[in-house]
Length: 102
Image (cartoon, rainbow, N blue to C red; front, side, top):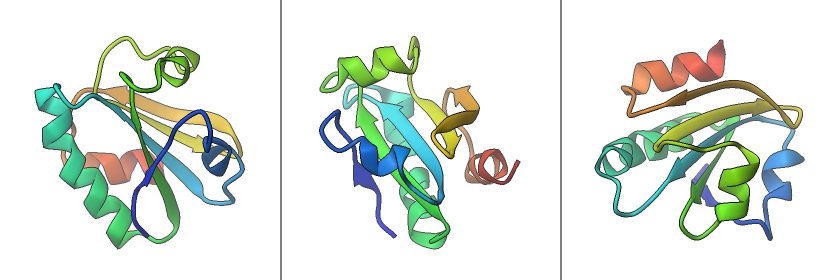
Protein backbone atom coordinates (compact mmCIF):
# COMPACT_ATOMS: atom_id res chain seq x y z
CA UNK A 1 0.00 0.00 0.00
CA UNK A 2 1.29 3.44 -0.75
CA UNK A 3 1.60 6.34 1.65
CA UNK A 4 -1.42 8.62 1.97
CA UNK A 5 -0.81 12.35 2.21
CA UNK A 6 -3.09 13.43 5.04
CA UNK A 7 -4.74 16.76 5.73
CA UNK A 8 -7.47 17.91 8.07
CA UNK A 9 -9.90 17.19 5.22
CA UNK A 10 -9.08 13.48 4.92
CA UNK A 11 -7.67 12.69 8.38
CA UNK A 12 -10.70 10.49 9.09
CA UNK A 13 -9.02 7.90 6.83
CA UNK A 14 -6.40 7.42 9.55
CA UNK A 15 -8.77 7.72 12.51
CA UNK A 16 -11.21 5.19 11.11
CA UNK A 17 -8.65 2.72 9.77
CA UNK A 18 -9.06 -0.90 10.86
CA UNK A 19 -5.29 -1.22 10.50
CA UNK A 20 -2.55 0.01 12.82
CA UNK A 21 -1.63 3.53 11.65
CA UNK A 22 1.80 5.11 11.21
CA UNK A 23 1.82 8.90 10.91
CA UNK A 24 4.93 10.76 9.74
CA UNK A 25 4.92 14.44 10.68
CA UNK A 26 7.45 16.24 8.48
CA UNK A 27 8.40 19.43 6.63
CA UNK A 28 10.03 19.78 3.20
CA UNK A 29 12.90 21.90 4.61
CA UNK A 30 13.79 19.37 7.35
CA UNK A 31 16.95 17.33 6.63
CA UNK A 32 16.21 14.45 9.03
CA UNK A 33 12.66 14.32 7.60
CA UNK A 34 14.08 13.85 4.10
CA UNK A 35 16.28 11.00 5.42
CA UNK A 36 13.30 9.33 7.10
CA UNK A 37 10.82 9.72 4.24
CA UNK A 38 12.08 6.90 1.97
CA UNK A 39 12.12 4.51 4.95
CA UNK A 40 8.50 5.34 5.74
CA UNK A 41 7.68 4.78 2.05
CA UNK A 42 9.38 1.34 2.21
CA UNK A 43 7.44 0.39 5.34
CA UNK A 44 4.20 1.30 3.55
CA UNK A 45 5.09 -0.63 0.38
CA UNK A 46 6.28 -3.76 2.21
CA UNK A 47 3.62 -3.98 4.95
CA UNK A 48 0.05 -4.05 3.70
CA UNK A 49 -1.18 -4.57 7.26
CA UNK A 50 -0.43 -0.93 8.17
CA UNK A 51 -2.02 2.35 7.12
CA UNK A 52 0.79 4.87 6.56
CA UNK A 53 0.15 8.59 6.31
CA UNK A 54 2.35 11.67 6.01
CA UNK A 55 1.44 15.07 7.36
CA UNK A 56 3.30 18.21 6.31
CA UNK A 57 3.36 20.34 9.47
CA UNK A 58 3.71 23.58 7.46
CA UNK A 59 0.56 22.82 5.47
CA UNK A 60 -1.39 21.28 8.38
CA UNK A 61 -0.59 23.27 11.56
CA UNK A 62 -3.91 22.24 13.15
CA UNK A 63 -3.06 18.53 12.92
CA UNK A 64 0.48 19.19 14.18
CA UNK A 65 -0.95 21.07 17.17
CA UNK A 66 -3.51 18.34 17.80
CA UNK A 67 -0.68 15.83 18.19
CA UNK A 68 1.59 18.20 20.13
CA UNK A 69 4.31 18.16 17.48
CA UNK A 70 7.19 20.24 18.84
CA UNK A 71 10.04 18.67 16.85
CA UNK A 72 10.16 16.87 13.52
CA UNK A 73 10.35 14.30 12.16
CA UNK A 74 7.84 12.80 14.54
CA UNK A 75 6.37 9.34 14.10
CA UNK A 76 3.08 8.42 15.76
CA UNK A 77 1.56 4.94 15.89
CA UNK A 78 -2.19 4.76 16.41
CA UNK A 79 -4.56 1.88 16.90
CA UNK A 80 -8.35 2.26 17.08
CA UNK A 81 -7.95 6.06 16.96
CA UNK A 82 -5.64 6.18 20.00
CA UNK A 83 -1.90 6.90 20.17
CA UNK A 84 0.00 3.77 21.24
CA UNK A 85 3.57 4.87 20.44
CA UNK A 86 5.49 7.90 19.24
CA UNK A 87 9.04 9.10 18.74
CA UNK A 88 10.92 12.15 17.54
CA UNK A 89 13.90 12.09 15.20
CA UNK A 90 15.06 9.99 12.28
CA UNK A 91 15.01 6.25 12.94
CA UNK A 92 16.37 3.26 11.03
CA UNK A 93 13.76 1.08 9.37
CA UNK A 94 14.02 -1.76 11.95
CA UNK A 95 13.14 0.70 14.73
CA UNK A 96 10.15 2.00 12.77
CA UNK A 97 8.90 -1.57 12.35
CA UNK A 98 9.54 -2.24 16.04
CA UNK A 99 7.35 0.77 16.93
CA UNK A 100 4.54 -0.70 14.84
CA UNK A 101 4.89 -4.21 16.20
CA UNK A 102 5.32 -3.18 19.85
